[in-house]
Amino acid sequence: MKSERWEEVEAVFEAALQRPPEERAAFLECACQDDSSLCSQVETILNSLIPAGTTIVEPAFDIPLTDTLV
Image (cartoon, rainbow, N blue to C red; front, side, top):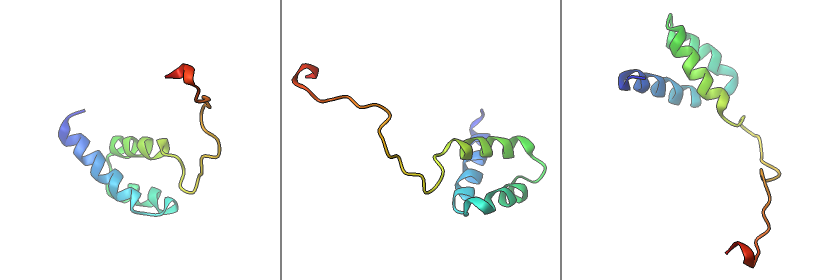
């Protein structure tokens, strides 16, 4: 991806993050206008985030700390 395009994706992504999740689709429609590729790229990044309010309850893995690992 060219740096100019990445800057555009990043700017729209950052602006989308400033909005509540329920307002992001409308924002992207307005911000991306007829650029479906831009909208898709930003949506992909947004969808890769852990949803707001989600708490990680358990670690992905649990390794006991012992003297053998040192």
